[in-house]
Every structure is written in structure tokens, then in C-alpha cells.
Length: 271
Ligand SMILES: [Zn+2]
Ligand SMILES: [Zn+2]
Image (cartoon, rainbow, N blue to C red; front, side, top):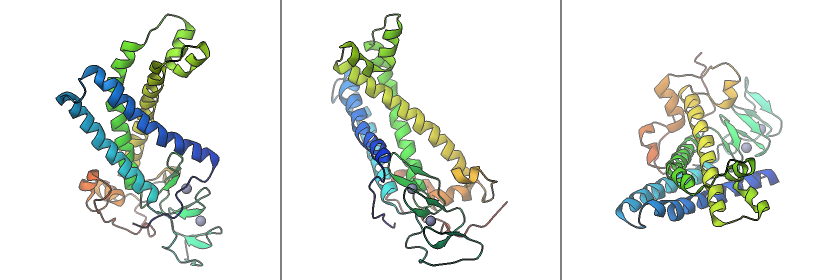
């Protein structure tokens, strides 16, 4: 894996969203493992430990894939020598090279990204040919954890929420931080914020997981979707383009080596 040199956020907005992501994840796990779960299982009992271990393992996988995704350099840097001009490839004036098909210049990363999918503001990196696999596994673990936790969180929320049939009560329930303005702030409001945030993260990651999964099975990225599908190779071959030759092992973590079937630069048009 080629490593990125500068992994820091490039703008204030990106810094805020990356920071929010980095801070909210540990809070989600704290509230689930040490507030919600002990409400239903005695701490460190057999049942508690089963749930705890499942969450710890999937969280570890989530961070491992996130780190691999952030550090993996999927740009043209070091892969195409400066000044290279290739007939039929579009010329990128900013990189001063001919950029391969399916690569796009990212204005935030300021480099052309191979088979560029999108720029992720929550991790401050571009998703492209070489880190697509890590991104997908990251989405899966985020969605899995969020829904797993939300199952128990929901019971906790239902049990603790007090509701009077008024608009302010409904607002305070859905947006717990509003309680600050009513001088009613307590730890339970903080727990509600985290519980709602966990569920929202789950919905977002779950939707992206399904959408990206669909695109992967068609050998497409978000940019291809806007155009005609021309790179489809058949279901299994499309999966190998992202997960590599040992695609069936990649769920074991980013350390599993799985060679990609092409270089991300030369794409045969199949349709
Ligand atoms: Zn470029
Ligand atoms: Zn980018």
C-alpha cells in the first residue's frame, strides 16, 4: 500500500466534520457499553460480555478499516511520472499529466484520484481505486454497530423518555439539547443525544452501504452513474475490482492481502 503523506483535513468545514466523527464514535460506545447495556445485563456477566465482545471486535474492525482508508494513497502521485502525456487520456492541467480514464481531479486533495468515487468529509480523504475496499468495510461496520446498539438504545430511550402531549415535550425528546434552554439539562439528555445520533449514523451508513454495494456489483462509482455504464465485467469480476482476488477473506480486516485484478488506470470498455 502506498501511504498518503498529508492526512490532515484541508478546510475548516472538513476539520469540523472529521472531528465530530472522531469524537462521536467513542461516545456512542461509552453510552452503549457503560450506560445502556448494564441496564439490561449485570456488568461483566456472561450475557453482558457477549454483547461487549461483539461490539469491541466490530469497533476494532471499523477503526482498522478507517485507518487503512485514510492512509491509503489512491491518487496518481508516484504512479504516473510528471509530464506524462498519453493519447486518448484527458489532460489534467493542475497535475500536469494525462489522467487515466475514470480518474478525477479532487479540488480538496488537489490531485487526480484513480477511479474516484467521492471525497469523504468525515475522514478527510478521497475514496478511489485503492481504498474502495476499506471504505466499504468501514461502512458495513459502522452500520452494523449503529443498528446493533440502537436495538438496545431504543428500549432504554423508551423506558427513560417522559412525554407529555405538548409540542415542547416532543421537541425536547427529538432534540434533547433544547432542554438546555428550559434549564432541564441532565445526563439523561446527553444519553438521548448520543442515542439519536447513533441511530442517525446507522441510517446514513446503512443507506450508503447498500448504495455503494449496488454500484460495486456493477463496477461503477458515483461519477460513472452520471454517465453510461461501460466498465461492467460480470458480477464476480466487478467484486474483484474492489475487493481483489481473495475477496471472500477481506471481512477479516484490512491486513488481509488481496491483489487487485488491474492497475486502476487502464480500463477496458465492456459495454
Ligand atoms: Zn489532477
Ligand atoms: Zn479528495
